[in-house]
Image (tube, rainbow, N blue to C red):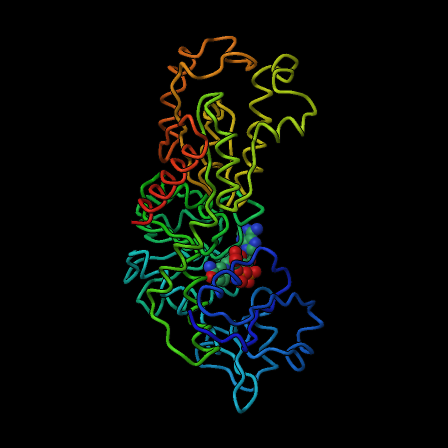
Length: 418
Ligand code: NAP
């Protein structure tokens, strides 16, 4: 951590409330890092009069800022956009650290691109940077654009593609669950890179994982470009290992801890406590359903049946699981709906909370009344096994249960990153 409390840094953009940049920069240095949300007409005035020592620039102003700069680096000039502005004797200087960011992400992914056919989805600002890196690495680059010669209607021309890089916003929060392409069209794929980092696993990346194709999200790029920007801000050098440390920290902090398990196993009690202890927010999908439906779960079952309840539950799961850094308790039967699998895993680690069946309450819960706990468990066990990333035991003391959940979550998180 670099100490420069006197330094005023920031980020210029239009809508910045979901930005991870303040958290990343807070790990790099203790300077002030302010989010400057500007309307297009205010960008010029801000650059001329704003009180900042240095600033990052994001969507949609990476080109807008260029005419206001006295000097622009060769790399930023070549890419045609600026994401870092510093002050020099000549005036404002523009750099582009996204080139370094994507190069670092590519290197970390271990995905080979030299002499490989790489499809770059989208033709916006990030696409230009990605294409420049891929070309410099010796890849054969094809841009897929909705209005280009190579577009989403003639993807079968490129069945032999080895790598896909998504530079479109398709699948990004809040439009989680959408994917720009169907990966099954590309049997020769050996890598998928998505510049999106919220959610941690877009539908594109979840599909790649199911096909066992190596893949990576855009958080590494975001951290790497921030590290490079910080170096330019303060005219210093920071070891690349900081990128990995910060990426892992932000990824872990923003990953949801999701609890599944039999009705009455303690998900809500332990989940609430864990949220309190870790400073996370808590959500309970059953509570969301009750609030939205305006009636209790037994009443929903009695009045509309289980199928209707499962639809409401899926909606509640999608709503809760697109959030970041939450502890989320789910209903005992959440694993019965296959589409909940991707929704739960897009941004979270799923922990199966296990409790001795004899200790589970048998009253007041519709399915346990109907079928009996032992029978119910036998039916659901394979589904809990399939859905979960790790297992935690329920203890007589909720504090111990919360500790078990946190350990299981941390271990599952570390295992994925190895
Ligand atoms: P941009 O300039 O707006 O470009 C996005 C491109 O995606 C558009 O030019 C368009 O290309 C395509 N596109 C947009 N909407 C689409 C839709 N509904 N369906 C299909 N294609 C669509 O934005 P950008 O600055 O390049 O950023 C793109 C994405 O990369 C964003 O999600 C951004 O958050 C992410 N990003 C991440 C990092 C990082 O550090 N991880 C850095 C930069 C950007 P066509 O018109 O040619 O189809």
